[in-house]
Amino acid sequence: MSLTVPTSTTLVELQDVHLSFGSNEVLKGIDLKVNKGDAVSIIGPSGSGKSTILRCINGLLIPQSGKITVGRTRVDELKTETERIALRKRIGIVFQQFNLFPHLTVLENITIAPRKILGISEAEANRHARDLLEKVRLEQKANAYPGQLSGGQQQRVAIARALAMRPELVLFDEVTSALDPETVGEVLAVIRDLVREGMTSILVTHEMRFAEEISDTVVFTENGLIVEHGTPDEIFSKSTNPRINSFVNGLGGRATPLHDGEGI
Amino acid sequence: MSIVLKQERAKQLPFGGIFAAVLGLTVIAWLFLNQSLGQVLLEWLPYLAKGFTMNVLISILAIAIGTLIGIVLGVMELAPFAVVRAPALVYVQIFRNAPHLVLIFAATYIFPFELVIFGNYVPFPDWVKAVVGLAIPASAHIAEITRGAIQSIPTAQWDAAQGLGFSRSQSLRWIILPQCIKRSLPPWMNLYASITMGTALASLVGVHELLHSANDASTAVQRTDFTVVVYLTVLIAFFLFCYPVSRFTQYLERRLASR
Image 1: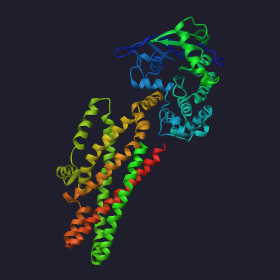
Image 2: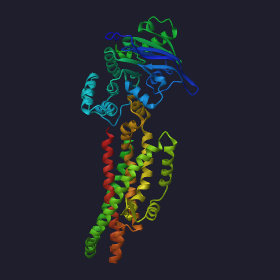
Image 3: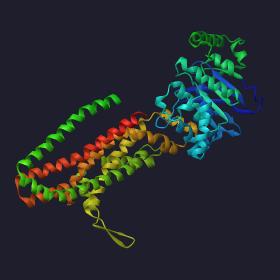
Image 4: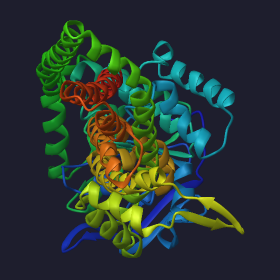
């Protein structure tokens, strides 16, 4: 919990967001508020619209109706691609499948956006990248290519790459779902550090115990709606909603033996 | 993918080597047994070599111009706007399906023998027209190679680039096109070999390249055995040029495959 940065300034706000792909209504009126420095976890069954919410926040998807605010930017009112690009520079996103650039070394993966988009000098970008690599505990892999790294290492590079743009907010889209159980822990440890430092984070995750441990707020989505939101304690222990109880316990219970105390 | 490539390499290697060795040894043995023939060929070799530099020059210029224009056309083929897409698609379809010889003839007779640039008369020689005639189909083929390579890059790479704040054109320039190089190398090499062999067609419009020189030599010497040997020499020259290029491409492919 990001107790180190106590603040109640709202950074992200969604109001009554509706989004459909054709006749398939994916988001049916999402309301969400994320304070600066907070970590918010979105949990819920597959297909409930979790990842779609993240993609609306950084403008990769454009909802049919509703208000989305990031800082002072009204995301839903952005008209041009140029304006949406400006927004994305402020928001880091980490994907389930890492999506590192295979033709670039680890260091180049991290520095390419700051250098080509922000125009930062190579020396300065490299220095920052090495700091970030130290933070994700991969400083010795700077010159490796993504294909030479394990899944967990690739995902930590992806996190460093997102941080290299010095974002105000980082979106984590099921970042451990494609990893084998042994490497999940190293990625979660990096995210835990980030959240403790006060980086505003929104996580879509199936790691229930991890969500419980690090989140300020947990949101449960189902069928395009936020069914319940509250503190981790309210969702994981005190919820009276039988659907949430069975989801939380079902997943948590099943995964426990695999992980030996690391966040599930 | 890499396994398939390795198998192809394994099949190619002995075939190319055997072909070169047999042809080379035949010619050497022949020249050794008939030394006057060897002497005549030796006299004509500088003339033939001069002709071959023209083939090399035409092929390099044609592939260079074709590659530059082709990449632009390939990107245009995938543009979000039909106004940009349509002309590229039409160009590619027309010139990809035209025989090289027809395009060389067309270029030779459509363009004037000199151009007026800022009041100066600049000669427009036949060999430059041959470059144009070969650069046109090369660009059409490279457009298709480029388009295919871009489409074969997973969309997740575009997502990742956009997520970092790259625009569409920046994503192409820094993320997508660099990844296309490796995928495009084998078809690019095939095309270069085909363009190089196509340079011999330029002899038909009077360009003094290797085949034209061989004709000259054969006409001047008037010996049947010399005629056979001189055309075998032409074959060997093309082989000795194309084979190392193909090996170099395979080397590049292997080096890039580790990434």
